Length: 506
Image (cartoon, rainbow, N blue to C red):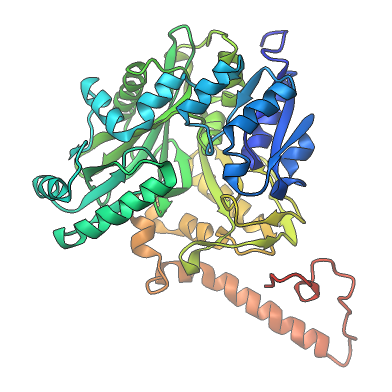
């Protein structure tokens, strides 16, 4: 560790748990931090933890966290040296990264050119083909519906329509037959235009039961570039990850080495430095992997890599951005134990995973050996509809996969959230399912097995908890109604849902 901080002050251009994560890394390096916030986040934890805070605008992201001019102005006014974008919002916006550099500030991330090269899915696929990286069979640069029909017929159904300029599942449609193609193209184009300002699409073969496996890569500005092993990210809903783990239960040491080297080759093809992720689709029936995309930023699931590889990725992001040389070679890294991350969302799995909003009447995080919680919420926080419904990232680390699964089940059972609906019970059911235990979870697993009409797979694992809840409720009725014991008043209980006067109620 250097004696002098790499920067004096960093503005964190994000909110919630990732802003707090970055601020903690800064404080350990002796760097002051500047928070930015919208009117909806005036009382948020990340605002309270920073050394300074700047109001950007109203709650709408385009008026606050997506307002590049306001972010750069806040950094200059606060005399910050650098901007860390976190993930989401403007983290993969090449124009923003270039504007930060033009303002004589340091962008903590890759170069604008690397972001631009890998941000366009169509261009990225072309670059990967040229670098010799396997890509999913498909076509880029198509325009007319007739072109898409010809391409789909050549590839063979099912196919996947994807937005060229975006990610996160937006502008993405699975098409099983030609009769569905025209409507899928129209809706995907509309969503892509609204989300990314770019309606271009590409088409690929849809691998129905594939696994999503990504490799963390890391490099400096002096030519060093390594991978920090893989993360299995196949438990998804609406193309969004819910649970991640490392090592992947699917990979052999030989495949891990092969895919890791492919990730490094792919990154070198665009002169990459800082943290990034090469994502692959893996077909377990053929053991063939294909390049999917590159995320030119820190990932939500980076903590599981930190725990198993023994490195603070955020601190090294900052140090590399300041020009330091990464002092490690590939052979210096080894995986230690097994780590799992569950994303705790304010959402209702029984209602299509729709977001849930309201005030957190109770928010009690689990604690113990091998348990880490990255969160930006506490009791009394408001969960609104303006931003992503991620409440916390629950991460566990243990000596092996079975122990990690058991530790996660225990931690989930101790995570108490009242006031909004969460996916905690759903994730407990996933942890208890034999498919997850056997590593047989594809990207369509949740979609195929979890729906209001087909939820029997989850019922058994939750039945005992529901029975206990009903028994407790009945016991309480008997207790309160007993002649031998007086009823206990609940007037002073601040978490009594029946005393809430706001519009949201349990």
